[in-house]
Amino acid sequence: MKLIRSATLILALAAATGCSSVEVDARQAAMNQARELWKTESPEDYRFTWQFSIMAGQTRTVVTVHDGKATIGEPAGLRSRNELFLTRSGRSGTMEDVFKILEHELAEAHAVEVRYNSELGYPESVFVNDDPNMVDEESTFRILKLQEL
Image (cartoon, rainbow, N blue to C red; front, side, top):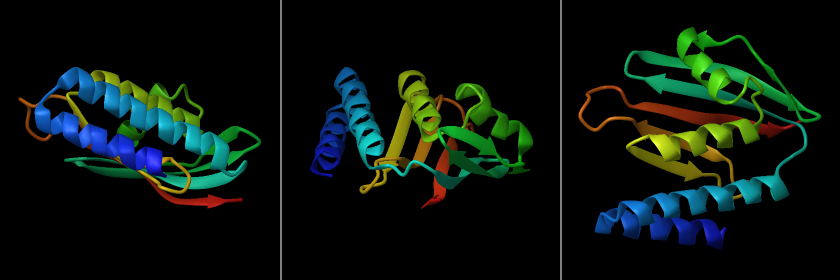
């Protein structure tokens, strides 16, 4: 938990100084620490709700992971936006796939704000701004109601 707080502080300092390469490194370090925490503390079987939001609306999908394999429920809401999750994650849906999506966003997006769960390390909320010169293209994904099965 102290490591994640330290990485968050480094990220905040990097953002305040405007040092983009340090900021990217700090974001990656925070994600790596969170991912390691997830690997050591996560339940083997779990369920969560994946929520993806954009200006036009949102979608929610229940994902169940049992024996390392995910079952993705029927999306409610913007079906096409839910495909983003499936496409970027390789169509699996495990928490490792969520980390892969986050890794992609950290590398490609203009700005990414992440809040990690302090006990298990998974990203609870991710805000993505792909282009600072565009209006309303930002997106958010959240992991809701994570529970051990």
